[in-house]
Length: 238
Image 1: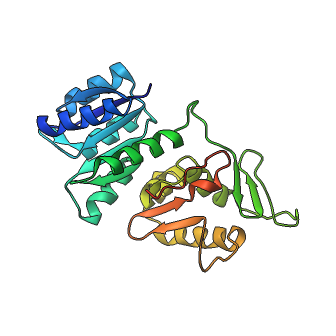
Image 2: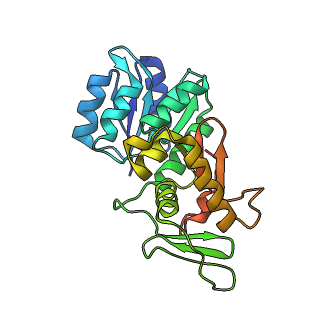
């Protein structure tokens, strides 16, 4: 049974979330402040966190950054903030998905299920990616085309795929992708990232001008279609 930490300062909404999640078969731990959330997260090691951004003792984005310093558990943001910049900040901080209030319980549960399915159970992600008839082995750093011919990918291109493959089907914010692929000194190199993404599409997509596998979330970042990662069957958009 998966355990979920709900970080929400409104008692009524927290109660609704608890009832919804328990009815769906999850164990629930609750926190109404950022400080309490940190204590509960370290004590219970939840499988997933639902985090509100507007907390009474701090911003949820700072909480996400703090948790990301030691945990790889999926983090879903629940927030009334609808501006694109707020979503980008949350994803850059390490959130895996962003659900805008008000939301339906069916949508929320679908996002939770998808995030838990995609979460690595052993700290590792799948190493074999299938782009139609082209296969990429991330562990061996080998790629082969439809006829078995080698496809040359640069080390930088493998690093981009590696970061995206850790979160199949989920948005990876542009700055987060740059930071994880090349380090903190490259987080502003949006143009360079676009060049590598275009190159990857040219090499891996059957129709690069109409990408099916490496998807752009305009103004936010990129997403690897979940069915690319071998062994992952969920294709729900996030």
